[in-house]
Every structure is written in structure tokens, then in C-alpha cells.
Length: 321
Ligand code: BDR
Ligand code: CA
Image (cartoon, rainbow, N blue to C red; front, side, top):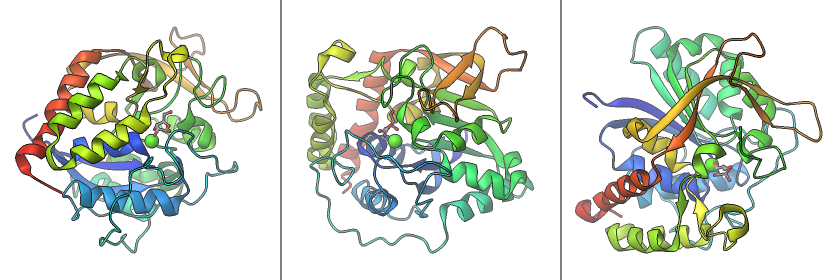
């Protein structure tokens, strides 16, 4: 990458969100304009606090953090099942000194994307790691901001894989299906890392040990977070460990060569009680509608793990935290 890529991380930290952010923080190729937490894995007060703590842990307290939506657009909130009661497993981080910004996530998105849409700043890549409530709200309030989005790179959806939170649906889609429908209908360039992609990259206990050995001053925290992520249940994934969902967004930004994707039209179910939040991909033009997303279908799993080890090893060299 020759120039830095302006990005905003919209997220709900969240253990895997935390790992994704820690990787991004030590990537000089990325210009992180803001972090916009949303209600998701935990209620907003917790995801916001976690985001502030993670910025301090990763030695990036200067990144603005803007509080997002407290609730999904229409449905009642649901929260993650694998992140513990704080959202960070058993990990206890110091009380943050850093404060959230006074303006909301939606205002932040409208401000940055609006400037880019007017040509006053480069277009921004939105990195979405949680339910899409903030992004959908911003698009509804100021539709012209679509012109300021270079691409949405998101973790969410389940296409040929079954769901992980319901039989049909992936958590981020189920947590705010109406927001997901708005975003998929916005006609934006989108790269989608759903369960089809993330289930290819399992964080095994031996990987956790390797990360713990390599990430210098944040090693203990990384090891604790990753150990909590282990499902201890080989029935579903064929091994111990947990899927490395959100960090794949960070890796895709930096090493797209590790991924293969196919274009498809994505529809999001918002009515059916049985299939709420299901993402249905039209791979073969059955709907007569054009593709609206590149769905990642294949991942070089070993390449991703090796690259992430290389990223987090930068903390050892930098001596942050
Ligand atoms: C997604 O749901 C959340 O629990 C994770 O942080 C990830 O974004 C995986 O389905
Ligand atoms: Ca997440």
C-alpha cells in the first residue's frame, strides 16, 4: 500500500473486536479517523468503555471514540454469548483516563463521510465489526454521505454456512437486521466476511501460545482474551478454539491477497420469526438484481495467522502499553 488508507472502525468490543483493533493500531498503512462503538456484544455503555480501554492498551489514546446507538433500529437488543459480562471475558483493564467524544457516532460518520462526499477529504473505508445500526442511521439521516464511502468491509452474515446465533443467522445480522438491510441496499462497494470466511480461521490453543509469546507488553491481555475465546467444543468447528471473526476485517485491509471472493446479491430477512437476520446470497442471478457485495469464500488461514502474529509482534518492538 503506497498511501495510508483512511478508515473508521464501527464496532461492539467484544473480544474479537479487540483483537481486530489491536492489529489495526500497529498498522501504519491505516489512518484510523475514529472508532464508533455500538450496542451489540454488550450494551453501549460497556462497548464504549471497552473501546476507550482498548485504545489505551494499544497505545493509541489519541484516536477519537464516539458513542453510537443504544439500541437496534426496530428489534429488542440481543447481546453476545461468548464475550463474558463485560465484553472482554475475564480481562480487567485499568479504568480509562480517556474520555468519549461529546458528539455521537452518527454525527462523526456524517461529518467524515460528508466531507469526503464533497471532495474535501479522501473517501473513507468503513470497517464494520458489529451490528450496522450506526451506519444505517447515518445513511438514513444524510444519504449523500454514501458518496464519501470508498468501501464497506464488514464481518457479518452466513451464506453457505448455517447461522451462529440462530439456525439461520449470524449475530451481527440478527442483532439489527433492519440496519443490515439498509446498508446492503445502499448501492455501496462492499466486502463481506461472513461465517463462510471466518469459520476457516480457527484460533487454536497453539496459536494462542504463539501470540502470547510474541506480543510483548500486551501479551498477557492478548493471551487472556484469546483463551476466553476458546469454545472448548469441537462438535461445531472440528477442533478446539474459536473462529477469528472480526480480525479478518483488519487483515483484509492489509493483505487482500489472502482472500478470494465472489460477487452476489445479498438480501437480508427482516420479517420471518424463523429466519430473522438471515443473509441470502443470489450467486447465480436468480433474482434479476445486480450483485451488491463481494462475499469472501476462501481464506488462506495459515497466511492470516502468520500475518497476525507478525502484526502483534510490533507491540514487542514498540514496547507500548
Ligand atoms: C460476530 O458476532 C460477535 O459476537 C463478534 O464480535 C463478531 O463480530 C460473529 O458472529
Ligand atoms: Ca464484533
